[in-house]
Length: 224
Image (cartoon, rainbow, N blue to C red; front, side, top):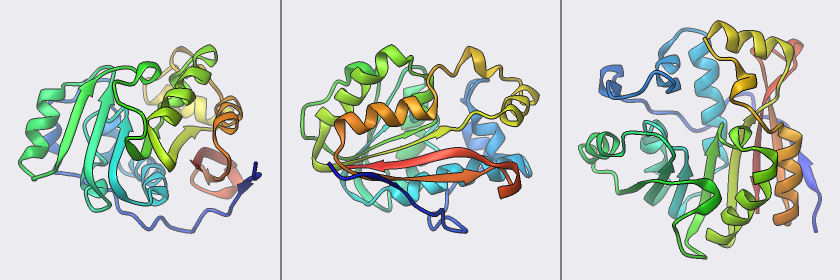
């Protein structure tokens, strides 16, 4: 097994998060972070963490995004993959489908659970999870990683992003109206430890909170 390496984060992401006009997302629910992407300053931080995750997606035939929400990544992913699959526990699938059909994006979206993925083995080139795995309880992480590994093609990649919890970050989420203690169950270290049990190699990048002086706030990983 090759060691998991920590690599330097590029100064700027190479992939742009191409958002639709704000009014197009009128179907989103109150807990959907879509509204934050359009805010000044904080919105840039939220967009950049997604863009760094998208940078890691190497392209191919099929990608599965777990927790696709309002489909904010779909325009960018459509430039890298022929087919976009998505699964989410709580979103308006019909509204998202209707929205992106107007943009001729080939998608297949479902309501479902990460720990019991409704797909056959050896299906996807990439499984993408942006700010999802921290919501999985530690007792369920092993099953989640097993399911991701099962549906990936041989040599396929898992790309994920998870927050690095820090006191300043908890305060920031509090100002946004979120008590992360009620929603975040697994740390970045717990997620990485379980990933290393199922994947032979990969790398980690860490994104600072606005500036390096404030420390890192987000961990992005690509495992194979």
